[in-house]
Image (cartoon, rainbow, N blue to C red; front, side):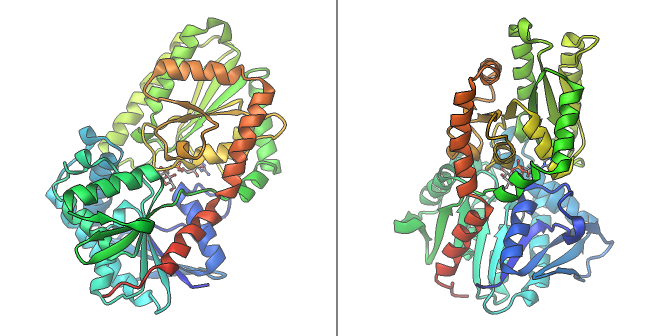
Length: 462
Ligand code: GDG
């Protein structure tokens, strides 16, 4: 098996352990590196007044992490700028929130240069190089310019937007052309891949051939759908630990006889939290007989706090949650528990297991791992019901969830009632079909799918 070099914006600290608060990407990549051995390279999360390119290493078994510090201006323009103020909203269909600033593009190009300069010497001849996400689209081209002839793969964790939206980015052409430095480009779903193909054929005069081959000019890449999974076995086991049982019992004891509806999301406007709260509020308004019998727990650890749109969504949610509780709470009942902090994974698993309903309703999401984790944590004899947005990538695989349009408070309200009253046989039938997919198409399956495609790819000419 070939050694792997993974490159992503952030690198998970190796010594953080299973209790750490890791994002979806981190959980998936650590699993891949544990299996194959190799290097994970990225930004340390710290800044220095002047960039030096000095690398800090950490080792654990076959895995090495290698991180660099960036300058404050890099973070403003590349991370908080082009990545999170331009590409993230645009790729989540939010042109209204997208900021188009030339300075951001300068910072994005500069950091991709810096990444390439520092990581290129770490790449050995036979390594497979796997670049992750929208922060690093131009990195493949930068590596090629530095003579890296290895197989290069790129995986996009977020949606690929329709062409009509993407062309509102002034530099859209340059961005997409940069993907042609890779050998394999992976997307979460066939729909996002279709959007990419549409762009390439209509804007770049490209062609789509057999077997996922996409050609523009003299470059042919393989563009594939590769839906990311979770470490299912590990998460199922986490749900049965003492820590999980303790969290589950804490939930039961704090609300005896009441059904828990749970949501867990990074605090991000793409996750549809105001719409979710509105759907729950509609449910409470339409079903007075259910008040006092249910409660909702929304765990939402803050993220990207330097970006104004994230401050705005947080303020909006503070207001909405206050309004819902002000309107409906009773002296012995709080309808909505809204918590802005993260929990260790086993505790999360216990909370999922205590829940009657999992509410995963992003307005747009590349995949959504919470949906899969919720399913993995359930008790097979008495599983909860997953309500899932049609606009999450996960909906393509998880068709036995109760699928909803997250923009519709009425649909959400109906789905909540349906989930709460669903007979046990139907819950079990749906859950068995869902867990089957979550087990089969887990994170190891995903890695193998992508890396097999990469190993099979013809090595690009430098
Ligand atoms: C991007 C794409 C795609 C959340 N709160 C806590 C916590 N989490 C963990 C979850 C899950 C992860 O964070 C979130 O993953 P998602 O997939 O839901 O969303 P993004 O962070 O937006 O990830 C997404 C993903 O990349 C992978 O490709 O699915 O579409 O947007 O694992 O459990 N973990 C802990 N405590 C928390 O409070 N420990």
